[in-house]
Length: 179
Ligand SMILES: C[S@@+](CC[C@H](N)C(=O)[O-])C[C@H]1O[C@@H](n2cnc3c(N)ncnc32)[C@H](O)[C@@H]1O
Image (cartoon, rainbow, N blue to C red; front, side, top):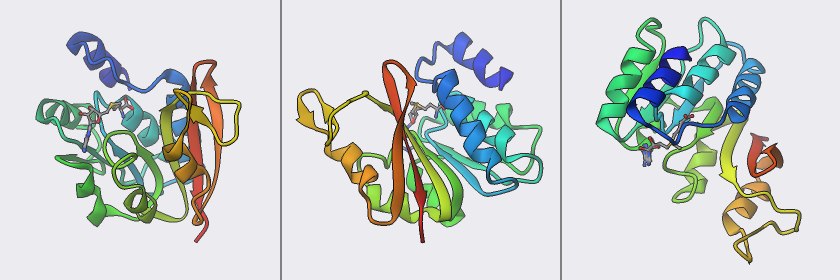
């Protein structure tokens, strides 16, 4: 985790998940000890490191990043655990490693293929999607319009889902695949 934070600071990578989301990831992963975890959009590795910590020893997490420089760095971040797989390329490379007990979908997929995102979850698998804008309306609204993307996950027939405020200004969808 320290290595990921150091790299983000040194490289100027500004899209790391917040510490609040990081704690949520670790808590969700801890509910699936030694489970299969995945992070789509590794970035500097912050979220992946928290997933890794939560899943515990013996887990075999997978993370994927499309920017080669970031993927190479992620290899270094996780170099001390041969059970961690770092993939370089599009998030769809996660497919052969599925199903996942915890999936932090944070780079590709969330918007372009929600169906596949849900398909990558194991039964009982937990999906985490951050960076939504808090809304007190139902359906939730974003920039004055119904937020169809958020609705898609909150009402998906295969999911039981909720949305939590991770800070006063940001919300996260947490969904569990029922079958
Ligand atoms: C918000 S940042 C990820 C932050 C990271 N998950 C964390 O917890 O700190 C999104 C990352 O997803 C990557 N990305 C965007 N589209 C992608 C895709 N289609 N496949 C793989 N990675 C993608 C970006 O290069 C960027 O590094």
